[in-house]
Length: 334
Image (cartoon, rainbow, N blue to C red; front, top):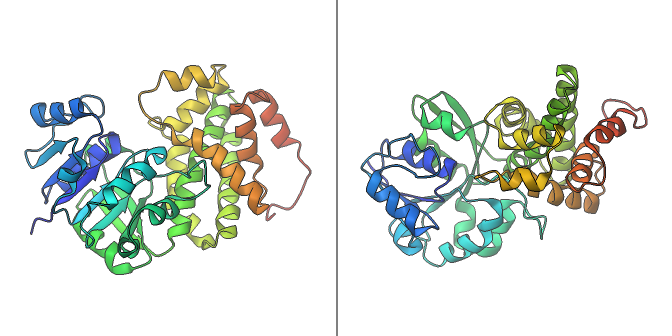
């Protein structure tokens, strides 16, 4: 039986999830840009993202948030992290209080240091809080849209809502697992973008595969350390939202964050790189938020701190690598 979906955000991931959900359900995409919504509605394609993917007839598009949310039982939030607070505050006033909200946003709010769980709870009615489900894991939008086999996790404190989303979205090429560690899933999904920038810098400097593997492993240790300080289960970081997402984002050629890092390693400025991209690399903003959060909690994160210093132009990429390699020697478990 078809269950109506709304997808807030017409970027790559919002588009691919709209196509996925449209396999069995009617879907409305909300686009901030009215011209984009009109183009999607008229041409059955997104004019900016995944432009070669045809959109099925049971997908409609609108720039009217109220229209997009009317009568929708599932709402997918697929907008950049810096836009979540504003858009979802407005959405919360018109959403069905019985709807289930699925957030795909991987980031930490810069001004507050809050994960998306914290941001959403500040702006949404309390009745919706148990219905927040967070989708995370190794999932490039293009591959999902092309029906490449993909596995993700759905984190929710109330298992029944995660199971409802699992049932609605799972299909032969998109497998959803459920999980109850919301903090762990969100921290893993956010900080892997910072590590991916570091790995990209390493690759841009041509430091080799040994260095890449070392950075990824020690980066996972930093993710786990901060996650535990926030109450996450350390085992979560060995799953899809932790190691799975980290491996993909650090090694995949479709990774925007790795691309930013590679170009920095090759000598381009951050301003030049960001200006040339038509999609957000969440790791740039997340780097600053993560470092401030770690400082506040007294958690040591040398890789993230090094990335921040490089992004701020305080040290050269080569100096960042030297600093990491010449830190005080210690046990691997520290």
